Structures are given as C-alpha cells and as structure tokens.
Length: 283
Image 1 (cartoon, one colour):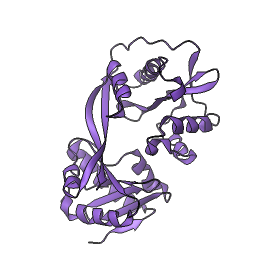
Image 2 (spheres, rainbow, N blue to C red):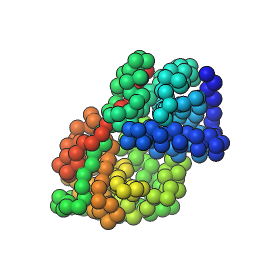
Image 3 (cartoon, rainbow, N blue to C red):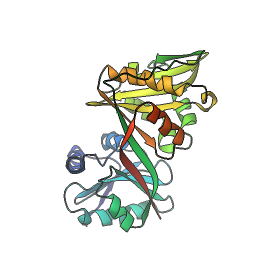
C-alpha cells in the first residue's frame, strides 16, 4: 500500500481528507480530527506531518515528545489502511514515542489501537450544560475584575499565562504566537468572548469562549497558580457562560478526567459528562 508523507497538502488532498473525516463523523457523531489537525490541513509546514493512504489519513504533531497523531478512516474498511499507517507512524516517530487520540466513545479506531499494542494514557471528558435556565450566582473576589481581551495588546501576556497555567499539558501550554494568531484569524474569534481576570493590573486567569455552531464552548479556562484557592474560578466561569448565553442555548467544555478540582468545579456549575476522548500511548 502506498503511503504519502507530506508537510503540506494540495487543495484536492485537503478535500479528500475532509470527506474522510465527515464520513466518520456521520457514522459516529464525532469528528476524528480535532481543531489543531484541521488548522494544519491548510497551514502548511510547521512541526506537523500528513500521512495519506487508501481509506485512511493521519495527521501527526511533531512539536513535542511523544508525537501525537489523529487518524481518520472514513466509512471504508479500516483494516485496509489502518495497520500500515500505524506501522509507518512508528517508523517516523522512532526515538520520540507515539500517541494517538480517538474521539468519542464510539470511535472505530480505539479498539484497533488496543489490538496494536497501544494503551489508554489520558482521558478527556466532554461536559455540557443547558443555558436556558438561570446560572449560579457567583461574585468576583474583592480586588479582581474581568475584562475582554484587547487585540494587539494582550497577546504576549496571555501566552505567558497560558504557558504557566498548562505547564503540565504541553499540547496547550506550548502554544506559540503563531498558534494564537491562527485561532484569532478564525471566523469564530470574538475578543468580547475572550475574558481576562485581573488583580491590580496583573493577569490572574482567563475564560475564552467559542461559538462556532449550535453549541457554545468554554474553549480555554484557567486560574493562575498564585490566584488559586481565592474563589475566582466559579465567577470567572459564570462570566464565560453569561457571554455564551447571548449566542447559544447549550455550552460544552473539555477537561482531563484526572483533573479532580476542575471536574468538581464544572459539576457544581451544572455540567454533566456526555462523551469521552482518549489518548492512546504506544507501548
């Protein structure tokens, strides 16, 4: 089987990959490709590789170890392209390690990865809540305020805060200025929904919301370590939900299953778990 490895794609290749992903999403209810991979389909080179084979596509981030891939197999027979593309990924990632995300409890690739020697290493919960009713009342702690992100002014401070808040999660904490700019260039970006919490003019936390369809998202949220335990998280979250309620009736978010404080916070805020993504590590 022929497998192409490319740093950039032609428009025809992008269309083929998008069709594969749509067919799998139609079958399972979840896209096999996350936002980072979808952005890289058209972004060209930059710590990212594309593998194309019959009935299968893999996008792999090479920015950190282990390399992290996603695979779309569409509705064709997964066995026709899945095994060989994993073999090629293993060769390319030798010395770095390899991990593969699957999205949704019904992902067709999760069981196949287990048979190929991968083990679950990280679980990401999807949580949702209805916004039609009232929101819990939560007041900001004394001395704190919340304001919208200001384009061309807040980028550097936010990137530093994001790196500090997500130091243990490199897929989020390692965002560069280019990563931020790519999101800000998306049609859904709205600085009014990118909320920054401050104390004495210093960034203390953030709640970035996203509306790109019928369901709004708490896209990225964190309270910086020095400001944790002061009662900031809940009112900051409520600020984000209040913004989302102007645009949509349902909010969702994604959170690591082993992040107990965050899972409990979202549960108190009325969110419930609706789905699961899993990062599978090659053993």
